[in-house]
Length: 240
Length: 291
Ligand SMILES: Nc1ncnc2c1ncn2[C@@H]1O[C@H](COP(=O)(O)OP(=O)(O)O)[C@@H](O)[C@H]1O
Ligand SMILES: [Mg+2]
Image (cartoon, rainbow over all chains, first blue to last red; front, side, top):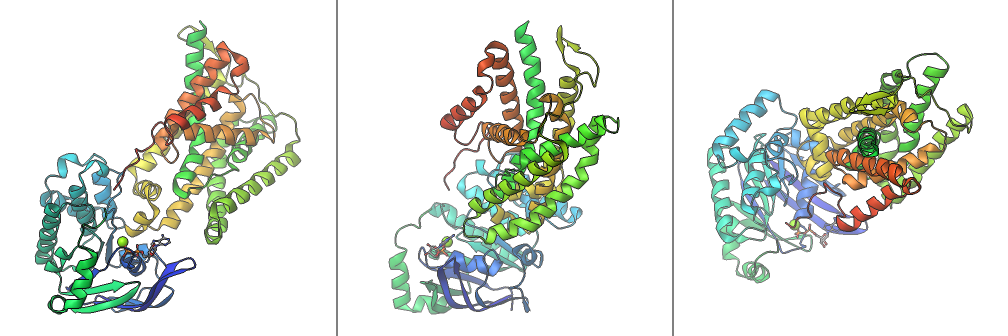
């Protein structure tokens, strides 16, 4: 099992947001976490990655408890997190990629950078520009490239589609599909956009910090009430 | 020619102000906290230079290498001793202001105890008589101190823009959370930045005693205000901004001092207000971006 979170509760200050969520992601699996704005998706991902303290429950990564580890330690063990912003807008594109490999040996980073330039040739000539100068779509691509520099075992992504036009969403889904075909990265992504179900094996729907649905994508598509509830909530484009 | 003199002095003072202020900005950039004790740390460095020269007969500039390591260690220890605690408090900003104010008062009290309330100064001819620059006779102390600020700033820039830890520092300045998610031990990077900020403050003290003509225990409170102004003019959290802010501050200060001396003490603050009103993020502040 890549990730196994059990009875997770978490929140901010006095406010509890997650009320006992179980979440598991098998090796090489792709799992999509669906939920409306404010459902608690970001909170769950941040807790999994260690950016927010776990209040109770446990989190295992590759079979070992990681809930006592800091975020950077979890990252060094093979988790990679792409936030909704995904990049450091003020830092150069190259610095962003180098930061993706922070803590790795220099030659490894250099080789990884070389691979990235080959995979995303459009980034290379602009590598000294700030990441914030890129368009929204290119920024997401940079975010994915950055998260992949360290060849993570588990890639956690928070709303990669946010702020993207439908055209770019499809491009991003293709890109992730390509990444999955070429490497054995496990994916956990939070989304409001159901397009991402296309690359997922399983889905969760969370609502009000609790699991509302858990099952395969096929189950999800069969489950009329969930679909309706969810599509009802996400019929208009997600807020950027 | 008054203009040439003001220009040369302004640049020299500007470089010095940039060096003297940069530690405050580094600390703010990484921690989003204003170190109210910054000026007192500068004054501490000035007293070390004073003691070396007046008591031991040594070159006062030796204070720079001598203070750097202890100041760095002091900064790192101060960080680990206080900041994690501050972060746990309800109102981090208020708690940190009170804490650093306390540190500032303690340093001031220690300075008063050790050196008394009188002005401590060193001979303006420590580095020789006036130097002729483009026909202007500029005090040697200003030239030496202004020019020495350049390598100090270069060292900081090499650290920030050419080293891995420096890159991590810039990442933490940009977003602490994003940096942690990139695998950076943000606490360690912040502690080091804190130490470097304190070390730079202390190191600039040896120049301060010459540039200001002397220091006393309460000079620290004025210096933190100056440094804050320089940093805000350039833009909070941007190290290059501090150089711009320092130069601008220096030039405005020397030009008003030359042409209308009674305004000299207030015009730099007016400049800060104007900058804040016109460009609230400082001259080199990032544009506010949506998305
Ligand atoms: N930094 C924060 N401080 C306080 N409350 C927050 C913070 N971030 C999110 N919340 C609250 O937590 C709940 C869940 O938010 P979030 O996890 O961001 O939802 P989602 O990512 O599914 O849109 C919301 O009610 C939100 O207002
Ligand atoms: Mg969210």
